[in-house]
Image (cartoon, rainbow, N blue to C red; front, top):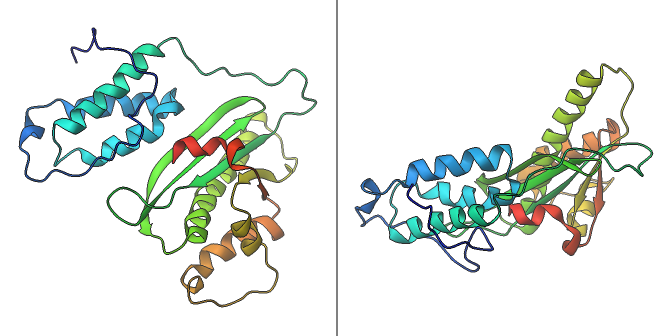
Length: 239
């Protein structure tokens, strides 16, 4: 993409930058924006979780874009140039007696254009990062609780998949202990774990989602949700 001489950047996205659609601009046909985002997407999905959120944002503007979007994608390439010697390390903690899968789940308020939440998760096995995701939810959310609930459900589905994969790879039929999911919203955790179901106007439309997650936690013992401080929330970088 002729970016060999680009100036290196310390972050994949300019802090505080807000990108918006530009329907009146015709520059999108002249710029290699789509190919550049596609290249970033491949890296973000395979080996570079640190650009997952940035790439997810850039991918929202494959059409109706302008020069500001092209500048933003070049910033991400400049960051990759600076961090080209970074890589994922696979290996457990030598001091750990037993390796386990655990994850972090988070959600932001709403994205830059509409009241649609961005959710993200990251899973680790021992000290190794093995799975991550940053995505824009397809649903509008009406509260912080609803946003965090959707994020936890998305992470819980990935946790269940990883549990099945773990048993298949290691060829074991032993029952795994619950997979820990860390969430930094204590109110959401308390609401999910309530034994007595309460019907509220602002949550009655998501009762089925809430019940699905509660069943995985209290009955099937597949998931355990634990509160964590926001400053320790590893999934924050994905939202």
